[in-house]
Every structure is written in structure tokens, then in C-alpha cells.
Length: 390
Image (cartoon, rainbow, N blue to C red; front, side, top):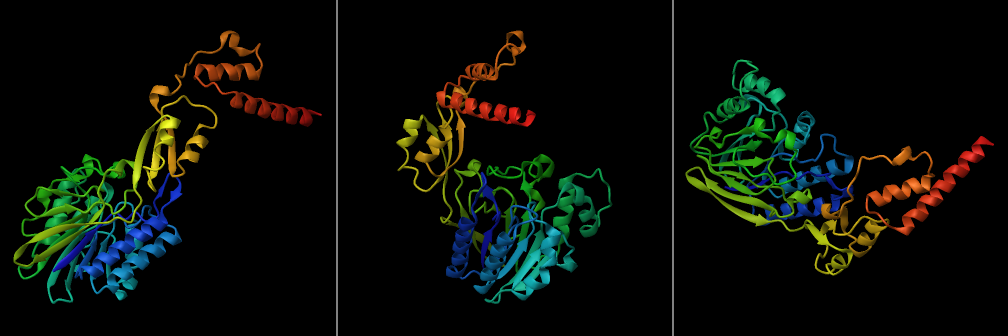
């Protein structure tokens, strides 16, 4: 059986206010191409299809098209909800998705009600996929009581609740099928990719890899955006995000995982690079030094740290040189030191231009254009006030 494991698409995610929908479309198109070329039997999307629980229409349309196209390759498609998704909304589309060959498990379910997806692939191989969408601490107790029949004790540890759920879903894995777990969670020892929602990734949400039984052929994880394999009794893998979602992920390698397994042999995993997304890069230097980098950065989106004091028009100068600069910041070494002292005499005997000049000097900002702009604004405001008083 050939399985394609991907996760953390985050469709609809913007970067510093810049839409990346075209990039996301290209990345998903590349993943569809991999599924077709590799003739995979099963595609597992391990959560976070969207970047927000209320995605806009364009993001929803793209995800629907991508899932339909993946099913159109002849593969079975199984999708679980992530912490960025709205699980109940995903579940609302289960019937429509099933008609298109896509199985959605948006929220945690019992084995009898879809928590374990049983299927026979086009090659005749049987597979069981235990599906564990993201569970917040708030709902973990309820899910553990529902799925694992654990008593509703609110002081139970999160990892114990998930251990019970996983145990219940994987209990009775067949020996004549490929047994998989698809989960969206944080496993202890995993490395953060850089763009995760930290409030739902911290240690209170982390579980040991030992919760996955040794007879599982492969554990397909989502949530941490860095591609990695974790030491565990079973093969436990994060595919990582196929597109770096934030500058904290600029060093990550974007891949999907091609998994080959049979009921009687261990899984063999091959990383297939995904290259359609634009690179993210942080560059540092003076304006002249940044100008020299123009050709080297290509089409990468940039986070720029300027090693010069702040001045009016600095951002515009940088973006004129580097049009793909989405963030421009001043190196802390050159940032103005803010003082809390008040002007002598409270400033009541000086006009606004004098006070503004002192404010700029305190922050090491010396730019005649800024002074002129302030003078024009002040004149405009005071003229309007005078007109209103008349």
C-alpha cells in the first residue's frame, strides 16, 4: 500500500497582511501531482486544512477543489480536523465529502461511529485508520468518557485521556490490514516548526509517543510544522507544513511523506520535496548593503532588519530596493532609547514644534523632512481649529 501523508496546509493564511492564496494553490497542485505520479492508494491529511476556524469563501473553495482532485487520482482520502479548523463544521460536510470519495473526521468519534476508518484500496489492500482530530483540554474529558469509557474526572491528565482514546480506537487492529493512526497533537520530544499556535502546543497539550501501540504500521501526525521522525514503538512522523507559514519557519524543508507498507512489513518512508511555495528569508544590513542583496534574494519574501537609525521614509527606501520586503524593522542596536523624563518646566512654555523636536532628539531621529511634515500637519490642524472657532 502506498500512502501520502501531508498536514498543516493552513489555507487562507496571510503573511504580514499579504495573501498567499496563489502560492497555496500551487503547493496543493504539486501535492495532487505527487499523488497521481506515485499512484498512491491513500492520502492522509492530518489536520489544519485552514488557518482559521472561519475561512473565507476563496479558502474553502481551494480546499474543496484540492480534496476532490486528490480523490480523483483514484486514492482514498482521509482528513482529520486540526486546532485551526472548526471540527464541527468539517463534520457537517461529511456526507457531501463521502460522495466525492473523501472521508472527514472533524471531531473525535467512537470506533463504531467513524472513529476508525476501514477501507479497501484500489489494489485490494485493507487499511484501518484510527482518526484523532485535535482535542482541546476543555473537551478531552468529554471525549475520553465517550470513546474510552473513562470516568469523567476533571483532574485526569491530558495525556492519560488521549492514551485512553488512542487505546480504544486501536484496540482490535487487524493482523491482515495496514493499521494507521492519524492524529493532530503535540508529541513530547517534537521540535516546533516556528509558526504553531503556542497556546495549543505547550507541554499541557503534549503526550508521549508511547501512547501509540507498537502494532501500528505508521502514525501520521499534524500540528508541528517541522518535518521529523520521533523515537517510538511504532513509526511516528510529522510531515510538517508543505509551505512555510511564517518567518520562523524559513529554514524548514517542505515535503510530503510517501509511505509504503504491507500488513506484514514495516513502513518505508520517503520524503518528496514540495517546491512551489516562495522562500522566506531574513536579511540584515544598512540600506547600501541591502541594495547589494537585491539580485541574491530572488522572489523570496523578506523580513528586513535595518542597521541604521530610524528616519522618515526609511521603510519606503527599503521597499523600493527590495519590493518583496513584507516586514522592515530597525536593529535594536540602532533603535532609539526611550526616556521617561519630562521636559523641564513641563513644556508649557514651548510650542509644539519645539516639543516635537526634543522628542525626536531624545530618540536619535534627525530628519529635516520629518520636521517639515510635522510643521505642515500642525499648521493644518491649528488652521482648522481656528476656522471652527470662527
